[in-house]
Length: 117
Image (cartoon, rainbow, N blue to C red; front, side, top):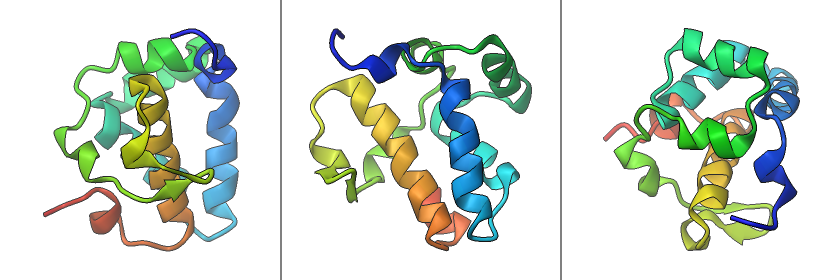
């Protein structure tokens, strides 16, 4: 998994930007956390521990207890790339999270964001 500097970037350094992005659109930190927990299987305490420990993205996803099986239902474009076409598994996980946060900021209902069928 060489190459992308985001892999070694602390998840905690990006997390506040997710919060700021959604709060500008009257959404909440709690909703961001719910999305992250849904995607990764982390508990709230585990998520907060990773934030405190400044875990990098690579380890954040590698250590995720249970990646949600419905994450392949996440479709669309983020940063000019279709998430379902990203070939690198770690980059795809990162972009899935970005896409869900983007949907939250755009006002989508949580049921749709969390791909409840």
